[in-house]
Image (cartoon, rainbow, N blue to C red; front, side):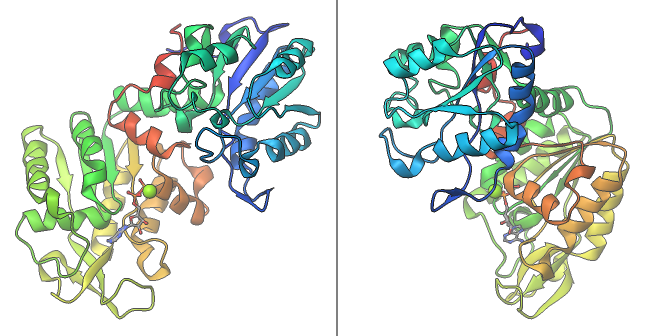
Length: 394
Ligand code: ADP
Ligand code: MG
C-alpha cells in the first residue's frame, strides 16, 4: 500500500503537488476542464487541512523553452473559479526563481499557488537533478497526483522525491487501487477484454494479462491478425503483418495457461473505411476478399456480453470496432452495456475505450475509468511506474 495525503500531517506544511493540468486549449481558452475538476479533491483536502499548497504541472510540449501558448495562466484562472478562492499564479519563465521562492514562503495555511509549466525547463523531461532540487526546495513534502505522467521519470514526477517525502493524491490512490490491486489480486472469474486497432501496441498487455485472467476476449481490429494466424481470409481488414506469428503464439500460450481465449465468431464488414459504406454481417470464416471487418457481429456481441456478465472482475482495454462511426459502434456499445449492468468490478483502461464509454453515457456505471492512456497500459503490462515507485509504502 502506498502512503496518501491522509497518512501524513499536512497542517502548516508546504505541499508540492504534481497535478495533470495538461488540458486542451483553443486560442488560450480551456475547452475541457475535466482534468482540473478531477484534481480538486486532493487540492481541497490539503487546503481544508491547513497545508500551503504549491501546484505544478506540464502543459503540451513546449520542448524545454518558455512559450506563451503553453502558459498555465488560464489554468490558474479556471482553478480559482472552481475553488472559489484565488490561486496565485507564479508565472516565471524559469518556473522557479527568487520571486517564486518568495511567493511560496509567504503562502499562508490553506492558500494555493500554481507554478508555470514545468516543461518550460529542459531539465524537466531529462529528470535533471538541479531542477528537481529547485522544485523540491519549495515544499516540505511531495504529493504525486498526476497519473497520466506517472510512467515518465521526470523532475516533477519522480526526481523531486529524491529530496522530499512522497505521498500520493486521491487520483493516483484510485488508479493504484484498481489498476494495481484489482489486477494483481482480482475477484474471480477475472475477464479481460482487449480490442483496438493493432495487436502490436497491446502485446505486452496481453502477455501480462494471460498470466492472470480466466478468460481473455479479443475484439476490434486486432482480431484480424489472430484470424490471419489461423489461416482465415480477412479481406481488406486491418492487419498487423509483423505480428501474425506472435498472435499464433499468444493463442498457444493461452491454451497452455488454461486461459479461455475468445475470438469473434462473426463480424460486421464494410466495403470502405467510412460510416456510409455498404456493409453486412459475415461469419468469421466467410469474410469476403474485398471487404473489411469494422465491428464484431451480433452473435459475438451476445457471446461477449454473456462472458462479461459472468465475471467478478473485468478489465477492458480497446474498443470492439470502429465505434467513432455509428454503423460500427454496436459491438462496443453492447460490451459497454454488459459492463454497466454487471455487478463485477469494471475497470476501463485506454483513451479510446474511455471515450467510447463516455460517448454511450455509461461512464458513471463503471467502477473505475483510468485517466492515463499510456500510464494505464504500462500498469496493465505489469511495469513499475517511476512516478508511483517513488511514493513511500505504508
Ligand atoms: P485504447 O485507446 O482504448 O487503448 P486503441 O487506441 O488501441 O484503444 O484503439 C482504438 C481505435 O481502434 C479506435 O480508433 C477504433 O476505431 C479502432 N478500431 C477498432 N476496431 C477496428 C477495426 N476493426 N478496424 C480498424 N480500426 C479499428
Ligand atoms: Mg488509443
